[in-house]
Image (cartoon, rainbow, N blue to C red):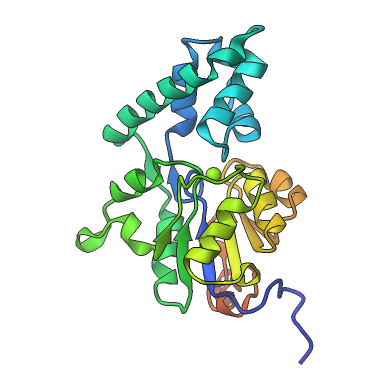
Length: 247
Ligand SMILES: [Mg+2]
């Protein structure tokens, strides 16, 4: 049989998840912005700025990138203090439950439980498990409990777009990279997946489909509900066929 044009990988064995912006609408962006007021004018810290220079990076790298662009000369020297302040703000926001899990992401993670695929969390953030443990699903389960492994916040030599964290995630479930799919909302994360030899599913929640495509995502969706779950285990990434009644 001729290979399907949709087939981008070998049969899939694992799905690796970024957390912020994929599973939860986490308060990182807000925490960075709030904390910035002590160090620079926060008005330049837009969502686009956050996505371009901070999202997916390790805390100190994000702090430095921000102060280099928005602070005055020498501001970058305060990166460690800014990073520390941001952590204090986000600890408070998480404790106050100031974030939402994306309903389509919960449905997707639940549906994966019924498929022969391992699931791994791979956020650059050390707070990922704390966030997911606060999302309570039916029967008292937490969103965190749906995943088989978690390498979030592990020390790696370089942050995304370097593939190191995703390679660690693949190893955590004993799966070769080419049988892994990465789900990411940030272009740097898609680039990391591709650099690691993995398939990349871009989730465009901010209207940034073009940036995710430019990062060479194999498929870009605006909701995970659009994904064809039946085709997924064979490594075929495509949108769900539309039921005839909807045509
Ligand atoms: Mg993200």
